[in-house]
Image (cartoon, rainbow, N blue to C red; front, side):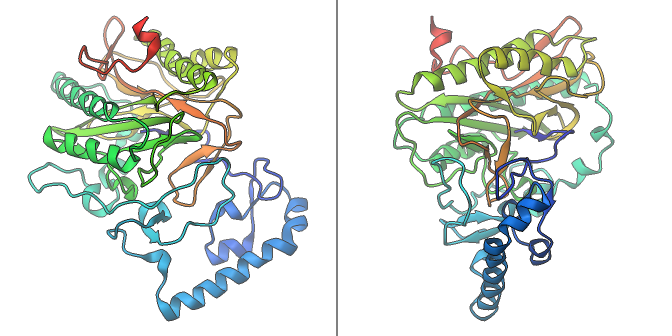
Length: 403
């Protein structure tokens, strides 16, 4: 599961008027606490040009507020209620499809209620309250930890479980399956292994894995939409077991995909492989982005800048940040005993992204497709160990690995 980039926290907002990168917010929308995506402008000129139509948003908001006071706010339905649309980063629900200028053909579908975790499963602190307090307050947000032999052994075990869980999800992917069904497989397989699905309730994320279809870059929420022939879908799995996390993801083909999607997914896989190949003590973290960016751009694709790889261990996300783009300013060098993820997100079109109203789903700004692959890595004395490596039993779903 991707972390926010140190140079670009969260998704880049696009101007409501022209689509260019936006850095201004309508002050009235801010007062009314309306979604930032619909209140963003690149300049005062665009804001003034949009005012005659944009001000209607304020009137609608005030009207909705009045109705909510009298009839109950539908957008604040209980998050534990099933088959509603997700809002407010998982803390709200609504029975109606949210208004949004969708960048591609994909739209969210209702989501099921939160899946239960048995009492005997050891849980991270966010399982109940939604906030990872230990993680946020840890010194390891600023210092890259050198793992002890005990931590490394626990991470090997956890990462193998995470790999087996992702493989279980991969086996059911086909046209007609919903991403909610994928989430159910991930959830049940994680619990069966004695683990906790790390994404569940992390900053109120409502599901046990991320499923990112077509133009979704990352953090897609599993829902009732059925996968269609020709789709691509990324499944991002993280397992918490024996007090440590193991994180990986892969992008899968649904039925028969077009040649451009095949090229995109294979290029993304190769970007990760080339990045892993340089991992060893003494290598600067910033060099990872140079390797990935070079291969992606030579293939005609772009690299997402808003999300990055991250340190991992007893914390889900911690130092270091691992940007995937060139000329990044990541600080530090690799040392034996460090563990972190590399997880490039590669787009068919522009690198810029937008955020859906659910507050989680990052999509390409131009609606073109995106792919991602991720491994959890251990820096060794002589190189790298891929803790989430494919197993002999892993499904053979990538044609370039079979030739």
